[in-house]
Amino acid sequence: MSVTFDDIITNSSSVEFFLQIFQSAISQQNRSFLEAHRTILAACYKNPGLSPTIKGETQEFLALAWLKKYNDSSEHRISKRISQPPGTVADPIVNTIINARLTGLTADHLEQIKYAHRLSMSAENVLGLFLEEFLAEQLIEYGWYCCWGESVRHVDFCNVDGSLLQVKNRSNSENSSSSRVRINQPIEKWYRVDAKTGSYRWSDFNEKYGTDRFSEDNFATFVQRILTENPYALAVESNNSWQLLSETSS
Image 1 (spheres, rainbow, N blue to C red):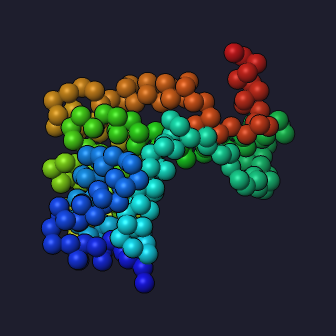
Image 2 (spheres, rainbow, N blue to C red):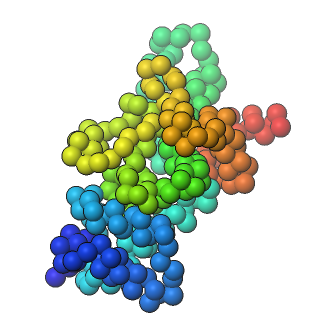
């Protein structure tokens, strides 16, 4: 019979007893039990409704499965990963729709629009990953640890003081299930952009921590640095005409 997080929490007399189970299993793998592990697992213990849905044959197997999920996500964060191009083909009827409205466009124009859209979608697909890693770099100084690999469900960052934070890129990007969960859980919400006004919310962090390190300029600089070091973080299709144009003009 498999063991779940809820089983371990229920059978643990204290948070320290709960953490010791994970620390022991991780130490046996010659790995360090980090402050990040301690902070995130303590959040799971104190908020069992947010515990990840991981199962194991034993407590030790479950602990190692949790660690693998956490490590895999951390080691393949956007600065390290190779993103994949869209796995679907474009629907030709989209070109027909556009051309029926904008009749002066040529076939070349329509192809450029198609690939510009696909490139833009690829960028939007990794935007949240850039934001997550940027905040992970900036917030750690204030006791926040990134919950890589959904190591706590519906939570992106846990603080050493027990606070929970959910991060979204835009104010309208939260789905209904995440919203419902937060109603009954002590999860703070932050989003980068107000979708209605276009204003940024970086000042929330700056005012809270008395700094100016959180800004759109610093975020843009971070994105540019990561893509310079790892251009494959953004997938570009080999036949995308915009890549050829970029190479020609550079």
